[in-house]
Length: 370
Image (cartoon, rainbow, N blue to C red; front, side):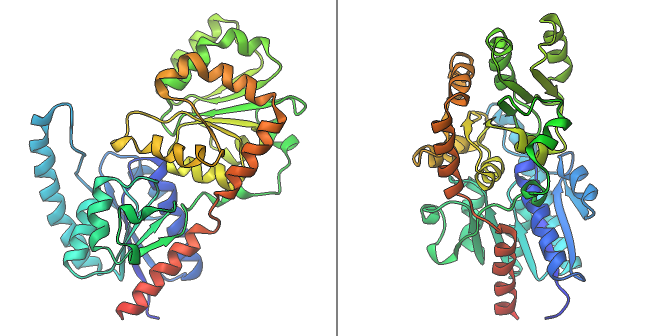
């Protein structure tokens, strides 16, 4: 096969970026001379994270529709039209064999243009409920790689491949023991640990829910590792100081060593983003999911329900988190039978080796198109 040239488009959140990087890394492992170009949205997280991972990225000036202030969508439409033109220029200049869309604003114009130019496209849908853009792109795509069963509701059945969501491979390392991981967070290995992760930017609701129950947490025999997000770190530190900084609660703006954080966790509290769920499934972690209400088409609730239906996670609604989250977490972590059942059931939903399976689909399409 000739030298591979691939464009990967999308981003916006870690849930889109981590799978994109995992796919790129797998392509490079299997085809070291392959050329990979990322296309993202200017001002978004991918413009920093992708170069840090060693890849070139081009930015499109594009944003999503503003449902609260419709008059602002005049500029959104103008930006989309401009992005379509620039996407066409990028495609003609780079001449890729394949364009992969991982979701996020930039996926739309790049895959739309690629389809128009008869370049093979692959949509990677991470969620159990497909968004408007991917549903539209999937109709013309050469293949759609999904993480959940039953996705023929959204995409042509013959195009679907069940591959799962690619995860950060370092999370699966088995070389570090739980005791060694506890040293990283100054934890007692003999005590049970709750890990709270509110997504890459943090979650005000999750932070407030935990903080409001700090009296019960500090009086308990459990430990908390808490990634609160950079938007809330300073304020939360001040609030915790006013309570005398309970020694069993460890707050972090961002946790770079998530492999160690997952290793110490007996129970995880998380939003229900597709990337997080895929990681938690592969690791078999007992989990309480609090879906974010601030996402398109309420897809996080639908992600969570796919697990709850199989007794693979506990669901707490965002508007009930203040009242229920901490009591349920403290009760669950003391119930070994419940933890074991949650762990076994979520592990059954794991899709292993997803990046390789997606690259296999990509190669099939490229050879078919030669």
